[in-house]
Figure (cartoon, rainbow, N blue to C red):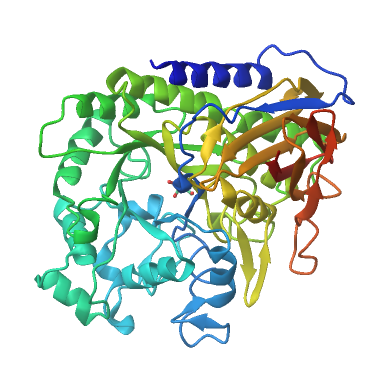
Length: 526
Ligand code: AHR
């Protein structure tokens, strides 16, 4: 290990120790010193950790993204304009599609060609409702282009064949005059698309075919072998990353078997990453209400979500055994809060409100991913619109931005910025029967050299102040609200909305007053 790497690791360990393990419970009023180490060169926080997930589930696609060309709701080629405008501001790096469980029953040919010829089927996973296939490959790629994002395509290993997946990737990426490229052109898109990320199945231990890890690995190898990307623009750089299915907090054997196979793989197949799925639920099946809760349930959810750190560490430890050079990445390609469905909604649609608690949960997870930036290079929150921990909720022509949306927008400066270790000793806080860290902090330097700091005041009741030594100014945005379960609604869309915040020089640093239950992102200067 180089001395820089050692320093970086030690700083990380210190920050981790300070952030939680065995630290004293400090007096609530104590100000917290957050020391940002800009001299140490940390890994780049890959922009792809800010990815999203859009599955054919409930109104996530139909209604939330796709309204059809003839809809009175303003749209461009069937894709709603208000949602596109909102998502563009998030600089969404990639969108995972078409699932989820839906992906392992998806047959791409059902979703191409004339609209009136598409196969209508039953969405067996999600509510048993008709799936029109009106939103298929061309519509998805159009959507990704409209929001300025890239495609993360999940192929069907569960009920499909390697030949089907191979033909789909050729259809999307072949430039030459092949039969499939001509068919794509005839369907309206002569130029090949880029497919930068390819998911090799989804949760194949469960909805993806209930395969043993050994069986999955044999299937995955064939799919990795035969799904070839032909786009010339992806030959040298932007090479397609293939993501195998890893664990979900229970099926650790998947990660082990995938890595074991990869460590002795032959020339004909390869992968670039292994997935990790984890939802914050408060227990299975998900039962915690999305609104109308107090500090105790806030603490249950926040305490549970912080376990993401140890899940990543466990998966990393397995991967390290076979891949000490960290050639393969972790894709946390499903994460977020999974709560009780909105009363009156179809339970199969997984629709839930999104409160300030979700915003805080999002910030804490993004900070964890950033701390694991050497391994975690892709993450996809579940999901983008109207499903689980969504960015956006719609109802007919109405749209509202959630607290989680605002956090993702505040975090845009961290995309592709260089992680800067922080040291802080905030102590712990007892809420109900759970212990929480009082404060969380994460910092990074963007490409222009500007330093950004995220500060989360986890305390639901008390404000605090943070001093960052060595800097004199701090300005940015803070997200908070009157209660931990405050939400935005169509009638009151700005209850949880970011406001400007700035720090004051104090001593040799800058001090920022953090309101209770808040997420703050500031740029700091000397
Ligand atoms: O995001 C909802 C579902 O959760 C996905 O379809 C599946 O992969 C996971 O179990």
